[in-house]
Length: 199
Image 1 (tube, rainbow, N blue to C red):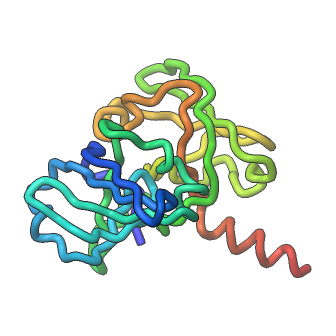
Image 2: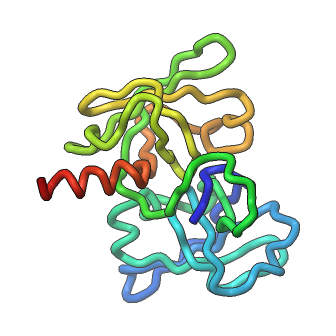
């Protein structure tokens, strides 16, 4: 489990095909000062995807990504130099500054436009068909692993505001219109929708 509070920006250092090219290993460089002390098998959220660290060094870690994950997230488009939002798994007693995030991406959205709004920037995102019913104004959503409050939502898009601090410490500072993003809906919305199917 995660909180959606990004603690470092990583950079893809290496992309290596595995399993006849269907899976891949990503080596991600990070500024975390204690990367070599992370235990192999630890969970790390990489732009919202919960992945397992399979090898670690002084300033990097490696993860293996299955074909299923590649097909359902933005990871398949990552190249050497791609920026990655990073968060270590939540520990009991840690501050829960964002919201409960599982690291299980529900779909890929598209950044539509960014408009300056006072001291922040209002971003609008297009969502996959049928996805809008899970997103509510003033609810929570994780975009590339970043916990955010939804400002407004309709059937096929929603908006959020990004303050300068968030833009500086996450990939939002590099996001452009047309870019794909990993979306994770609020866990509560996922279960409420599932229960409603049995009415």
